[in-house]
Length: 265
Picture 1 (tube, rainbow, N blue to C red):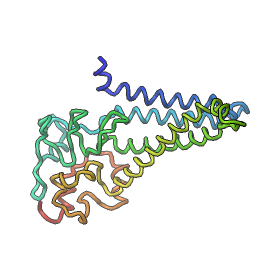
Picture 2 (tube, helix red, strand yellow):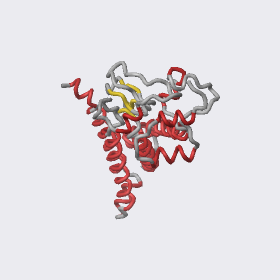
Picture 3 (cartoon, rainbow, N blue to C red):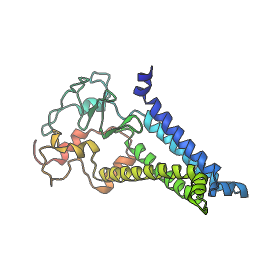
Picture 4 (cartoon, rainbow, N blue to C red):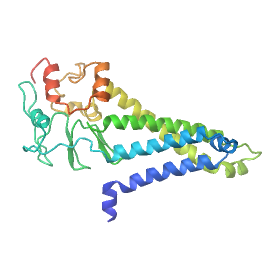
């Protein structure tokens, strides 16, 4: 029972949600800008902040529970696009069967040993959301990071506004202990989210995944490309961003690779 709870990510998601609402409660109960607005009857700021936190929690669960793009069976039950993507082309490296689930992997797919599934356009497995980040939920993962960062920075400002002065450090620490703990957690999470968001926005802008960036020399369709050679999936900044955030379809990466690679591999 306990192992199954860990496997499904229940404890991770519950801990994240509990921590979020505990910190939010601390910010509302202490003498912060939020509390002062409530006492003056100005409810716009507290309501907007509460809705932003609620949005971040909803996005967290959406990304955490969403299908990241698991590869379907390569039988006739698969989609036409998936079957088309599995047809080897002349200059495209031969597609291989996964050594774990024995499915034929489309290009840019990778088997996640945590999820025990192959994932299209695999980026990474995120222990924070207990789910893979792949073709179907990568854009929502970045939207979640943006909303989360906004909520964290606003919460940092609110927590700082509630720090009260004192004549000595002992009563000051007793009065501000919970706020200081909340500040420490918010600062750490803000730094992590800033780094994650910056890295992902850069990789999206060049149409590369974390897995491809970290393991370029071990991936069959990239290892024969020189270090200074253009990424075969890179279509330029504007097209990359448009395709990533606006295109709602399954991409046949074999065709993109075959079209943008000048030499046979």
